[in-house]
Length: 492
Image (tube, rainbow, N blue to C red; front, side, top):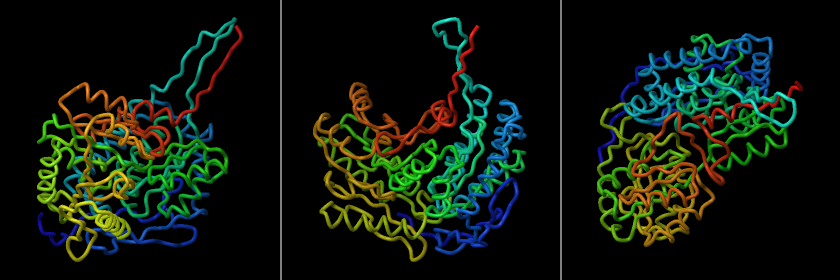
């Protein structure tokens, strides 16, 4: 594993540090600010205006005004909405390197990864839903009697959106793009750990020419700004990506307020399954990527790695060797594969799971230690001989900790894979197409990858079974979450 390098000076201009309400950059009503931290150093980058309930109220009023039937946004054609989204995509693409550096600074992910993955996926998402804007249409229905019956798909209204810190730019796109394509207005709260790219995109939204109040951006904390969005009586829908624990709170607040529509993309403990007949080179590297990508901070990470008994020892040996070669260090260094965890709280959480694994008897084969003396870097960690009942096999770690379990046959495997509160994703590595289909059919997960992992496209829906969420992001299914169906029946 590479030695941690001294973090380089990041030459990137910081965006505004204020709230975006009604196309104006304003201070919070309280005047409060909060720090955003560089996870590579633990040092403050800058202070950001801290939104609370008063600011949510202001933003909702602006969004409601923008949703009024006589507003410029509502008068804009569907094709016009698509043009605005395409213009925003162009501006993001033109500023891709700056945004990638800003993402690396605030989140800790390697700059090379942000530029190669996060930015193209973000631009692609806006362009995909821009194409949908003028294709949202209802149907005519041949009902009985002398009637003409048809449906309209209309925007839900004012949408509250709360996004996480692990993919700040991309999650903003996943939320904003379908909501705006469908004609909604938005109050969006970025994660308090990573507000910078959300604010920079806010600047680009203004540059693109979106009407006042269509997009409002409120950095702040979950228990204040986030909770105010969830319980607000004039927000028609809330969309949240984050932990299952907070998802419960969002849904409860939504139900107790005005029964607002809810979509939730929540946690996971996804089974990643390796059969003995798999291409072993492909399976080892693919499983490494499935767990360690983005510092292990992926809701769909292949974090329960089931390996068939016949190839278990070989797979474990090769996976440990690969983890030991993983380059941890300065996110701006092109050779870096893994940056720091996002903050001290996440670092402490990951290390507590390492201690739990050791205490419960899992075999620690590499890692489990801090890297360097500052920042939140964790050495890539691999546990073998993990049992289903262990904490590290049950709970979402959200860090670079691989847990490898052994299985004998497919029936036993499926039962164990499904024995969890989660159902976000799954992976399977095999040359046998029958086994691949069997896993895809029998494992209860919203996405199943076969001989690959973390393959995303804006056209492919993503979301979870069970407590991994409600509804879907992306694709036509994701667009439907931002529309209401109206039936119109006319006597002829």
